[in-house]
Length: 383
Image 1 (cartoon, rainbow, N blue to C red):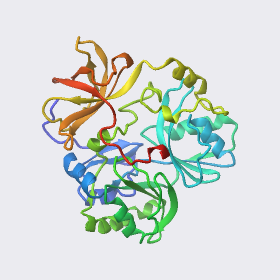
Image 2: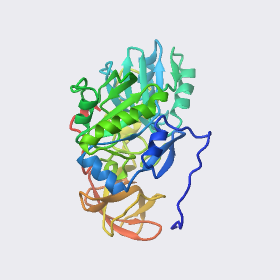
Image 3: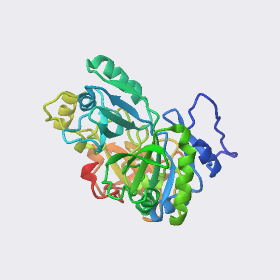
Image 4: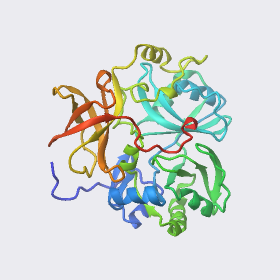
């Protein structure tokens, strides 16, 4: 359906504003979506213009909807190891790790970035969902001595090939040696934060985890002024680059019906650990028996697709049988082709296989291909 007038989103007390909300209005936000019960910007210019800034210069923006769940207390580390299947025996203070949270059937509650801040203090930064409530419920029945809450923490993300130069300028070289997927407590002009070399962009990224929401717009202005030297631009999360990088979105690219093996996150599962964790027995069986579906990339013909689908599109084999669904697709300016992410039957997932993608309006010839098209940073073993 083609809309003849712009859609409006109501602003009220039921949905939370981020600490950077006024800044996003000031610098021309064109729209919002709702993410973790907070307004998340969807764009400031066109997706292609924001993409070109992201891959060529430096960008920054309001990612405060990436809410944190703080886990603290004497049993915090044991609790963190219980809620996810990754082996975290080498997770030290200052380390960040990518994890998945699984239920008793081995299916995914959400994915998250984990930050270890102290011996007994962690932040879990999940995708859109109710992870805070899930972890509070698990904690209540775990018998462990932990406290689960949402702290006053709001990320501002800085991304692009010049991101390191911008960080060097902002902090006068203090964090030049911050390693990939590492975090450190710091401040900028007396604004308290944790700086981490993390981010959901596919490019070199840093996140400034602001720890005083009253200072959000002050921080935004500091970054805005410093970024001018590097042709910096304010952007929203960019679908083109995240699809290129195979960076998955919970609730879109995968959901509660999927397990880590389906979406290619086998490396985040260690069923041979000498500890118990939620879903361990189920994940053992899935690993042994294999999965019936698999996440794949597709390259599609046709005119450039200028926005991601509003609904799942159907993936068909050449005989017209449904074999899966496509979640997101877009035209890549660098690849000069349409690309997308889909989950299909495992038996139909062979690289190079030809398929048909059916939208509500037309069909596209497509080929299954390996993910990602463009990797993020090289130290992926640390994630």
